Image (cartoon, rainbow, N blue to C red; front, side, top):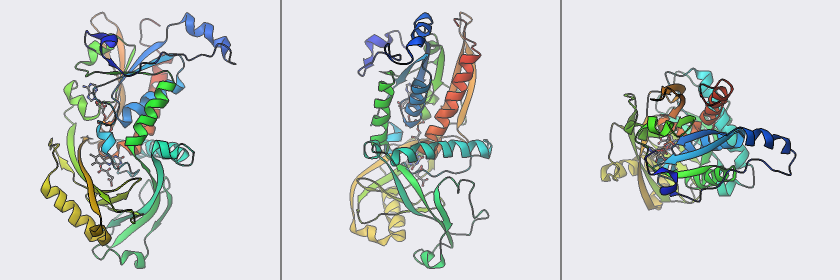
Length: 373
Ligand SMILES: Cc1cc2nc3c(=O)[nH]c(=O)nc-3n(C[C@H](O)[C@H](O)[C@H](O)COP(=O)(O)OP(=O)(O)OC[C@H]3O[C@@H](n4cnc5c(N)ncnc54)[C@H](O)[C@@H]3O)c2cc1C
Ligand SMILES: O=C(O)CCC(=O)C(=O)O
């Protein structure tokens, strides 16, 4: 954090932390908390990864105070523009059972929201459709098939809709629209006593000098203060179409063409341009997206464009969810927990990787390398 400190920066309704109810059943714990200063945790980033992580920590660790420091807030993060469909790929450097847990934890968390009266406010709902393949895949049943609902193979009759494709899956998954979900999470975070500071971090070390534990959820932004040669942008362009008659999603398994009906528009995608930092809408990309999507779902030709958007996915061979330690000049060792590099799967893995961070922070608190504890 820069020398200006939290009070001189843009603090959005900074709320005080009132974790313990003096009159509640946990009144006995008040003594403990007031006698011991809370562990000060800072989360860098307020996209879907940062907010999910901050909520998990603030709601589950009563002896921690949690602050988010973020350059951009909703609706100006990459997460805000994501299609928000829960679907995953396989990362090469993470054991499959760990990836499965990240996905299942996220799915179960969002399914509970979709089934609750909060669903509309949070922008989370079930979505049914199919994923189709131009060639029959070697692995006909992906490792995540039991996480989604009603997974099955497409019938020959269903496949007739897609003459250029030879195989397909049908299933029900979730769609989590971050334009609604992020403000909803932000409110939940503030209700748990969390504080948000809008500021750019330029150096983790100086941030660490103000906190006991640092959590890095800065997505592609980590490039500005971290040396990680594996991180690169993967540009994605989408078109929002008004076509309310389209109810089911269609995804080409190559990941380049998809049609995702949402609350207010159908999202058509996409592009995956590795190393491309351009944020402007590209005319040629738009024509390609429309042509490919209309060839899968010809009725889209009757829709009209509402808006277009470009985002840069935080590309990495595999997400980085792990702990390291940095040593400050005064000798103090501060744990830094990374949670970034989710590529095109950040919404899909958001709650699962946040819970993973919660487990890592809990270990730090039980075995603190923090000199003041
Ligand atoms: C077109 C498109 C469609 C997508 N569709 C899906 C989908 O359907 N399903 C899915 O799972 N994923 C999807 N994704 C991927 C998803 O958007 C990302 O994986 C996800 O947004 C990453 O979240 P994040 O919180 O890590 O990053 P971001 O949303 O980029 O958030 C990073 C945060 O860190 C802050 N920050 C960065 N640097 C600094 C700094 N130096 N100091 C302070 N703060 C900093 C930023 O301001 C921001 O608040 C899509 C992506 C694109 C581009
Ligand atoms: O891959 C998909 O189909 C969902 C959209 C997405 O995740 C992306 O464009 O990054």
